[in-house]
Amino acid sequence: MTQSPALHDNRCPADDLTEFIYLDYAATTPLCREAADALGRGLLLFGNPSSRHSAGQAAHEALDAARAQVAALLGCPPAEVVFTGGGSEAISLAMRGTFAPLRWRGHLVTTAIEHSAVLESAAALRRRGVDVTVVAPEPSGHIDPARVAAAIRNDTVLVSVMHANNETGAIQPVQHITELVHAAGRLMHVDAVQTAGKLPIDTMTADMVSISAHKFGGPKGVGALRLSARHHIEPLVCGGGQEDGRRAGTENLPGVLGMAAAAVVAAPRLHDPAYRQQRWHLRTRLLQHLSALDDTHVNATDPVMAETISVSFAGVRADTVADILDTHGVCVSTGSACHAGQDSPSHVLTAMGISDERSRATLRYSFGPATTDADIDAAARATIAAVNQLRRVSGHRRPATVRPAEAAGAH
Ligand code: PLP
Image 1 (cartoon, rainbow, N blue to C red):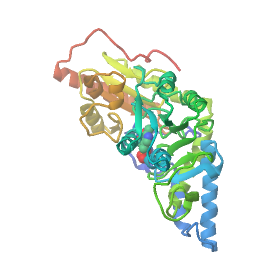
Image 2: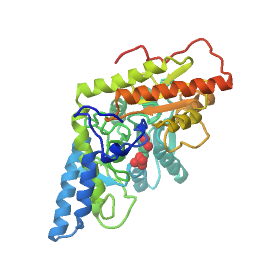
Image 3: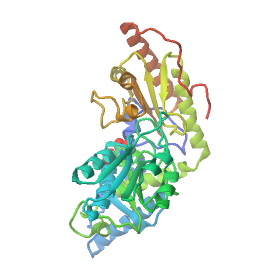
Image 4: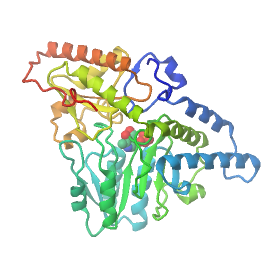
């Protein structure tokens, strides 16, 4: 990666050693320098935050300060932040923790484009007796709030909708949906794992919001659930009374300090128009380059996250393209990282009505604060060469031209 401007510089020590162009930020992000420093500090603060002595109190104070910093990202009082072992655990805690005290009775509404952490939690709830309704997306990749409202029944307890999709970047109208859900007197959970640290989430009024540190420059295996003081859940992990009885176990102080440091680094970017404009510049630049290829299609229309781009290249296997790009030092992904390597088409693209063939021809490019024009140019050049080469070999014929829908548009 080449150098980027100071405010947007989220480079970590590891960046200086990398020889590849990393465009898979939706899977995970490089650790930012501040988070690396905070992790080190947390390792040295060895006291148990629950201990009364000075070593314990020093750890406790650091934990409190980190909680306040993560609360600022989430826009909630520090007492509403429950630290977890990542996004999947936060989501499981929100969903299972809500239905456990109800002895697994009631109804859940979620959507077909959720991450497997939500969908598998929903499947586990269904096996225990919870009724589940899965709302389909529009072909654009968005969830229609009216469809969610129509799915709410007398026995609905919880609605869970993601803020932005991890494969397409489509931003969901979660605040509108939250208002409808609250008007019906139900609970709302938002999986904000893809947007925390990238888009503002501090004005959300959902009862529960899940985030994960490694998606915004923090370490892996640590996340948080914003849990409204009004809502009581049953913990998944039982033991001591840590996290106010909501998640037992001695706290992962290094991880939590790393996450808080990454949240502080991300904060100024969230409301910086120049940074947002730079994101759209990179997106438009990539799509403009890729418009040199016929018969390509951008999955998901506005509103989308600038930094996540899902493109299908007819006539090729995306996993083969990704492997070729990897040999050129360009890291991209086919669908979500959790399902990479599986041959089944993406459940997200299938739910949007996209054919299996087009789904298997889809690459996801996702970029972050350290990404430069030069990275985008090199990735596009390598993609164009790989797709042209594979199309020549397979004898793919050019149909009537369909170019990336947004390529000509500016944001
Ligand atoms: N939700 C979404 C939308 C995600 O993209 C991910 C990770 O890819 C998760 C949840 C799970 O987060 P974690 O990897 O921290 O368990």
